[in-house]
Amino acid sequence: CADSAMYYAKESGRNNYQFFTTELNVRAQHRYALEKNLRRALADQEFLVYYQPKICLKTSRIVGAEALIRWQMPDIGIIAPNEFIPISEEIGLILPIGRWVLEQACRQTRLWRETLAPDLVVSVNISPRQFQDPGLSKFIQQALDEAGLPAQGLQLEITEGLLMGEADMLLPVFNAIKDLGVSISLDDFGTGFSSLSYLQRFPIDNLKIDRSFIRDIPENHDSVILTNAIIAMANALGMSVTAEGVEKADQMFFLADSGCQQMQGYYFSRPVPVDEFEKLLAANKA
Ligand code: C2E
Ligand code: MG
Ligand code: MG
Ligand code: MG
Image (cartoon, rainbow, N blue to C red):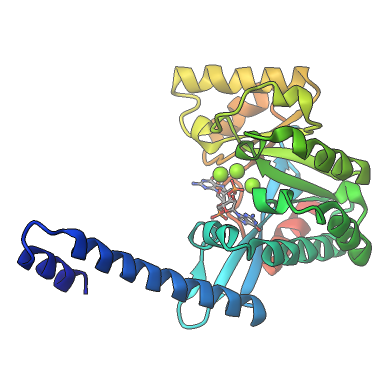
């Protein structure tokens, strides 16, 4: 179809306009199909939550889990969140999807805390659109109550991008969440473009150093300096630090020596389905 559009554009000489309108149509149709599929996926419960362990660098034990959504599409397989979360955010579908993840994660974590890991903390990613939803803190309280999970068992991960712009309007939301006893982590830290002053203005408990810094330690001198600086700053401000994307033993040793509290990454485990995470927890307990 794109080929015939190209041909048509050539045929019509300097007038490329037709080519672009055709391509836009193709894209709009593709998008429309994706939107339709997403709405159906929610109704038909095609989403799954995977869990990736967070490891305490002092004790080498699993202390937390990040809940990461997957889309199990019939006949197609598992689809990664980057393929559908941004569009869900655009069309507002992230609100029901996000609520579903939160409910699942709270229930699952309550079960794990009862059986295998009494202090396990689950982290749930919250997109900007969800954070701007005035009903968020009320819904969190409800999800905790329904699951029987104490607030200390839940952490929210938000990205720096959220804090750009009219950030002052978000302060009451932060405070409401903190009042519940739920902790807040700043995800992909170091990749946003907002000012560091928000670390003072908002009640943030944990910084999650972006994978791009971790990737090149300990070989790359600049990455080492930046990672050390982030850890020192966070700890001095009373925040804990989690390193994401840890793939090698060298990175783990470096982080343990640098005062970083937690790590997460393929080195220990990829995100896994519930039954596999349970095996990790059982081994962790033994
Ligand atoms: P994120 O919150 O930064 O999650 C970490 C991502 O890094 C995950 O990708 C995880 O699989 C991947 N990762 C973990 N360890 C390693 C490693 O050692 N090496 C490499 N190369 N990658 C690693 P995933 O699961 O594909 O999720 C991508 C993004 O989608 C997440 O980034 C998050 O922003 C978003 N997301 C996932 N689940 C949800 C959700 O329930 N709600 C919302 N709003 N966003 C979600
Ligand atoms: Mg995250
Ligand atoms: Mg992250
Ligand atoms: Mg990331």
